Length: 320
Image (cartoon, rainbow, N blue to C red; front, side, top):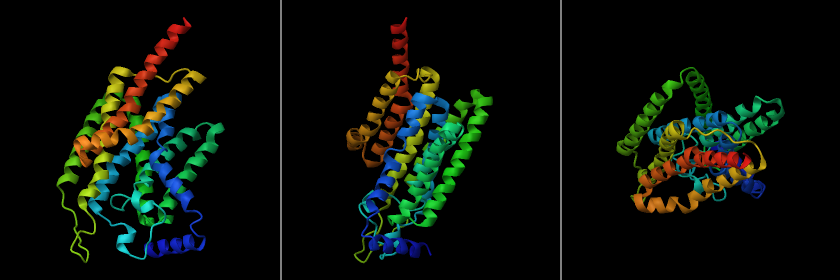
């Protein structure tokens, strides 16, 4: 049934000469490369706690998704059925196993967290609707492009909803018991490294093609897992550092702060292009991706907030 649905979408793509493919590729690329900039900006500029809510929901998914992917080891649709021909450049960007959809578990907690944040104000509820539409569009785009089955994206949506709910109750608990946060961070740190150990030593299926070569290389499949778990580890480290020693608060919402935060987003994008290759060259593909994830998350959770705090102190001195 799932393959038939993908073949139906494939026939539709072909009937309109792939007219919608560039748009669907834009949606799917925005979900993993740029969507995170919105909660980061919210965390820096508008509301620290609410920005963290969306980001923590995302890191819950970054912990769960690779463990499920590398346990289920479900092959991509075009491996399962040669009639599936992914659209455009999507086959190159579809790394790792298929179940659940990593694009969905990236877009849904980030957009879902922002939908919750913007729903609280009647003036911004229209943004909540847009965020929800983007979640649905991202999930559908993975089917439309032929790189995920409906089951992949549905389970990705379920994981994202569970992560949003878990983050809500975690924040509610920590609001009443703030002294417990360090314990949660320590527990999460230990679990992440157990996860790294698990995906490193577990066995993987090795099915051979007609030439006697593996259809899917398990080593390559593990790479995203290291990166995703590295993001969760990076958040735990950065959150502890920020909470203990930085403790920044969003600055006055004027044009200077707005410009500063917008400029601060530039390295979030550029680090992937210029720093990740350098780190992976030093540490290798797996550990390099993990190390880069830690550095990347540390920048926007702790380092730039430190710069904001220092900038705030300087602005206050100028106004005296």
